[in-house]
Length: 435
Image 1: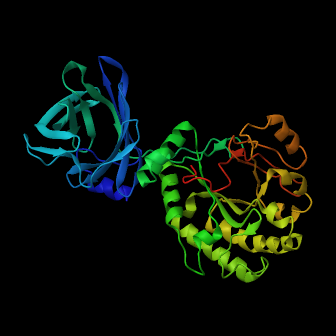
Image 2 (image 1 turned 90 degrees about the vertical axis):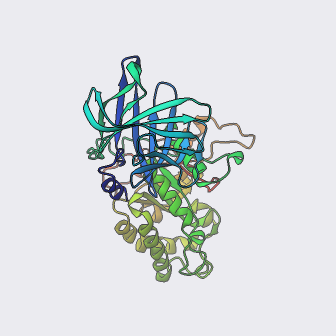
Image 3 (image 1 turned 120 degrees about the horizontal axis):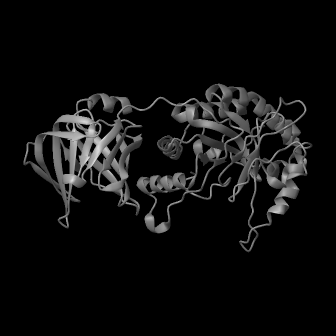
């Protein structure tokens, strides 16, 4: 879709593609003005606007000969605009005007020639946006280029450099073992509501705070309420948020959730080792892969599994068989994925004993850790450190101040280990958006 819009607007006055960037400078201001297209979802491009006065983010939806404003964030949250709100109309004749919720917009000059540090641009259009308080801003666009001037007179910002095409991705220079991965529960507050725009806004805030991946832990019976019937709306929404922010995804399919199974009713009594169980779980993973499998970098099968198996030791063998059947399919469906089973932190002493058949199949060990005491004070870090030493086969890469931490296992039979250096978000589905 991104490329389709870019091709359609190749001759437009603001061609948009993710990665596009326009930098302007002014003789009267040391700080440059920057427009950058940071993401796209359903034809709406997120355009970050940095300037000396305020940081803002537009949600622009290009159409033939114009750009509509779908949303606006001036630093106080995302505000959705009515459908079809025209912001820039490049086909209007000189003197033509239109109005929207922000004010009145007029084409004040067409065509114009504009000299900038990056060169001279012909056939430009100058547009004046007058807000409801009577304040004016002036925008000048060159065909096939985008904004070349903001403002008027000697203090105007002029285009210094730009790129319309998305830059080629840089070769990775950081290994999985040396990068710190952090996810944050980014939940909209009650007074903001639970709209799509609100969740996207909170994900943006999480990204700005340093989050660099998305963690999502649905139950199997949430994704598949009944045999062969999938409910994936929330999963698709999470994938869209991850794509919008450039995040990989850590997905935990909760086949078991602490002390109980979370399987669809039709399979709830099946033995884990029954090939039919593996077939149905593989079918679910295939459905997930169709929706956004390329984003899944880590896959966990089961949540706090030790709380389930500690009173059902006889089922561990069946779960091992389930993993042996499902993991090869998962690696085929999600190229490059690393697979694990989640345990609680206090099961560390049992990982090399009771749960060794499961851990031996994992690429990393995933642990849930709760640093809060009952009175909401934090446990001293030293207690966690002492606990982490109870299993000599593990290296702790980092601990999230929230709830989850993960490490790469290190056993004699395993190839030379390196750290996953991963810090996950909450293991429980306590929030709406796991960012």
